[in-house]
Amino acid sequence: MDGVQRIYRQAFLISLYHLWERELLNMMPKKDYKDEDVFEFLKNKGFSPDEANLAALRLAANVAKHSGGTSADQLYQLRPDLFDTPEITK
Image 1 (tube, rainbow, N blue to C red):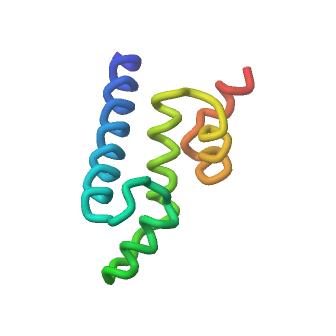
Image 2: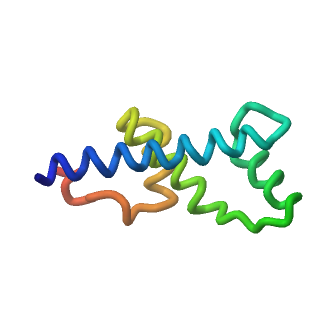
């Protein structure tokens, strides 16, 4: 069950991020998602985006899709609590 639960969580994470990205890009003049452009757009509309958590969501979706790499390194720097560090160091 643990493996199935992990897969469902990853699928939900990826879906949630892509829904966020798609809806934002539909409202923005630029059609290329970059955190800094999205945050500026939202601030100009009077919103206060949770930049750290939205960046973590983007990175986590990338890690869920592609495993290790740059996104995993960046996510670990931003949110080490999301990683099973003892398992990684085995």
